[in-house]
Length: 217
Image (cartoon, rainbow, N blue to C red; front, side, top):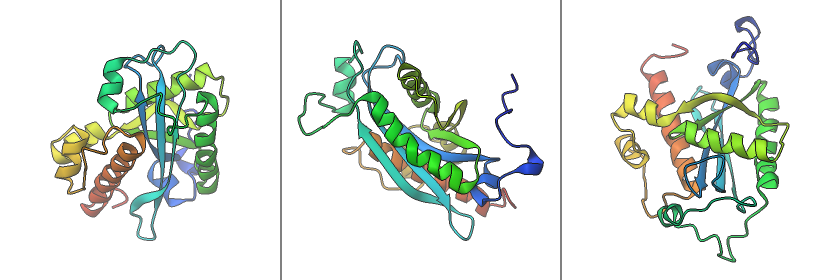
């Protein structure tokens, strides 16, 4: 199988600027909060996604965000240490979690709509330590037999790596501070907050590269 077979050829790229910039992919920023580190056995507890767009000057910016609190799937592992780290109380009556499959389908729906609207071929996940988030999303997709996963199954943009290159920092909070972005540690480890901060960081890096003479030059 050709790993790039689902991406249009260079002579047939999308007409939308964001599609041209990322070679047919729509970057969507994701953060998940989980019950542990094993994507096959541990619960997916929160998921947030931030859709990006380009302004008239070709600068990347946040367009919309979506988030869900998620019920642990039957038999899922939820480690006490993970809950202590994230501050999630899975028994909080105000949390109002949703079934895992339904939550993912609700988040995927507007992403697929944006892919269609921008003429892109599919979404590519942007995340901090991206393969962690991608692994949990892929596991949940497989568990719930979701046929229309908008994300590429293995390609992703990792803001930990990009921030290490751009700012010499790989921890999200420190990278945001180095990029002169506000970061409140009291709000960290909420999927929505972390996804928005990751999106701001990714946009800052991409836009800085453009200003320095990078693509499109």
